[in-house]
Image 1 (cartoon, rainbow, N blue to C red):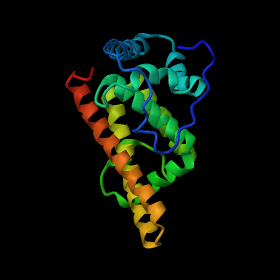
Image 2 (cartoon, rainbow, N blue to C red):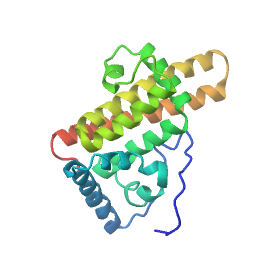
Image 3 (cartoon, rainbow, N blue to C red):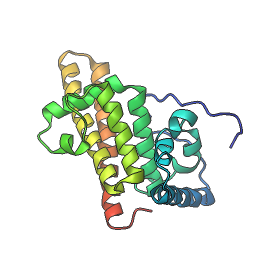
Image 4 (cartoon, rainbow, N blue to C red):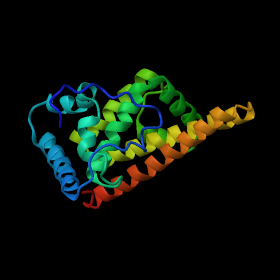
Length: 210
């Protein structure tokens, strides 16, 4: 890795599931898994109350490039892949809190499931509440129950996906084909991410998330 300081990476709204950073040799992939386990263990075992806050804020200072070099090539249903996608979800939210809050708020209005409650956002959900939720979910992966954090991320993604789909219907009715297509694609990506987070939560509970 270069010695120059890292600058935060500005992510477009579609970066969540299609980012292609990092290296792919087998040894690098093994290091990704080992480093993810070591990181979670270190934070949980530490008696330094500031350590988790430094970890949550890490991507704000360094961007996502450093983590990408190790974790972005890991499978979506692995520990490094899950931690990477949690960090990326938080970065996406912090990049466009108003836009993401709109998706989540609309989703909370149309869903009849418990996902809004599981996600744990304050209601009504505006940009500030969305930022708080993003920090809480990532923090929970380090100091709380990893499976619960992943369930919350999945619930958030399902709610936002429902909101994006509903807004896409509005755009379609208004004959705004470009906007409808963009929102439909975003809903599909969020729904796919929700499935991955749910699968990772199940693996974690079974002691198989590596």
